[in-house]
Length: 239
Image 1 (cartoon, rainbow, N blue to C red):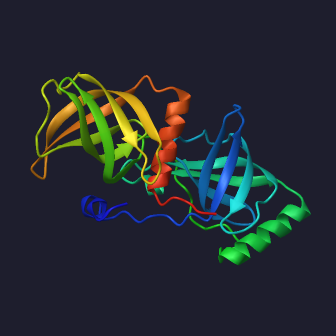
Image 2 (image 1 turned 120 degrees about the horizontal axis):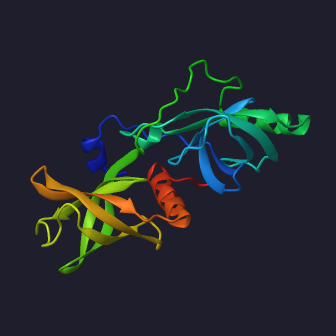
């Protein structure tokens, strides 16, 4: 995340990602997410698309710098969605079934990473609101009626983005209701996420022309790639 993002959203604190977690949800979907904390009995997992509280999940935890742990069954007990800051969004899962060998592995991992063995005392409140967003200067190519234009994203969420048009101003044809195609460029990687968008507002911020868009016709694969992009921007993860 750039210095510009800190100016726009000065309260943002990037989370410490302590483990990569492969989550096998009860609906059959498998997603790779990241834990900001885990203990001997539970874990907090960063996510942009929240599962249902009460849902069961099977986890494989890959602690940072350590060997992966085995399979742990769990139940989601709370979710949190912070529209203003994606770093605060995710869910808490309580471990429901694992053997002594797994408990020993968890203890070694939390000790090595300097994590508390016991769960935190505070509750994770349930919120059902808009998708969270992340702030920053991110690359994008927008197909406008005048042709392709390289622009930047002021912020990004699972449902849409705020796009800055640059010094040349808004191209003709960009107005509320206009349908466009955007290519979101993942930093430090050749991956490009292509999405169809609808313009929902236009205006100016800090003297620069901007327009807000919402994503439309998102398929599950594209939604998962956008979530991966947001998680990448929240700090990335290296084994």
